[in-house]
Length: 526
Image (cartoon, rainbow, N blue to C red):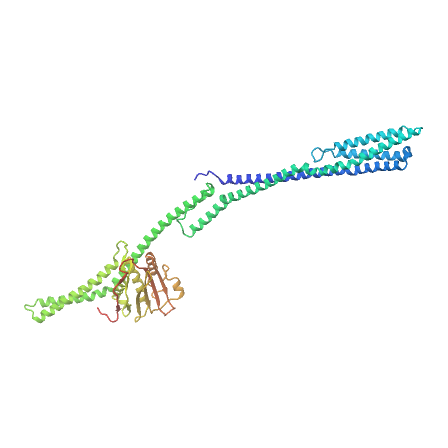
């Protein structure tokens, strides 16, 4: 897959977005902070002028009040001292006014204050000039001089009283001056906040689509594959390393699925070989068991043949001898057909053709296997009862199901006493046929039940057996879509094996004529 959009580029884009958001928010914050600082500095600088202006106004008021009380004291030391204080207060005011001269702060214009201060200085100079002219001799000149001094004092009072009003007017006009500025700051702050929220939301969505969602899908797909769903494939549209990882996981799953299928095929082949080997071993077991049974009809045939030979050698056999010869021929024919029946059943059981499933009567198979086991001498005295009831058609391979029934019946016969009993019953449960093999033998413990179908597990008293019989039985039943269950109430309480197989889907409803048969080795003779 082409790595057109690697994760590092996406992370770099996310870092750029975050950096842009931080820069915008930082710029908005710093702009507001610096604007606030400028306003504070402007207020602080202008506030420093107020004490000087108030002191200057107080000194001028003191001079005016002193002159109003004693107009003739203009040339006195006290009046001169007050003028000196007023000049010092004016100088201090001008110094404070110059110290707060800032061009980049609100209401920085001090032209009115400077003009007024210059006018106050001029009035003070004029007042000093009027005082330095001396006291005139004529009364009229004196009155004119006092009127001039009073005029200068009135001008000083009027001008000094205006100084604080300038600052107050500018403070009133401050809102209008800074309105545009703070509106711009508000708009900038809101725009920055909205842009930051949008960018962060977009970054969160992209992060989910690029990182969290692919990781979630990868984890989900891994769990699906781990649970056994090897047909599941991951599909990511991110076109990055996550998509490459998904493709690698899909390839690994496909490879693992191919290996699993190959192993399953090999296991099935080996299992089939083991089943056939076990089937041949069962045929050998049956053949060894029925060999002596075939000897009896063969001995009868040989004896009848010898008798016929001796009688046919006579020149003219009587009618009685002819009837006896006919009886011998019938016996030879009966015994021959008996041997033929036994060998046909053995051949049918040992047939190893292609595995083919067909509708098969389950109870009939159980009856045939029980009929073969009646010839095994070691089971003499033990009986197999086939319960009455309708047979059921199942879609199976007849030879493999015969192998299943044979293993169950042999295990049951081995577990009972010489006078014990094994019963076989068939019932229908929904769309399944249930075959039960019940014995009154030694029973099983919970430990044996737990490991009963494991390969190479056996608990036979005589030490015989490979422990593969029931494992093969379980595999055959599972391959046919059925299941096998074993139960026992305890040692000495007998056992029950229940085989469930799906019914064949045929129009005959899978029902044939009832079968009732009892095979009792104690009451049947060769």
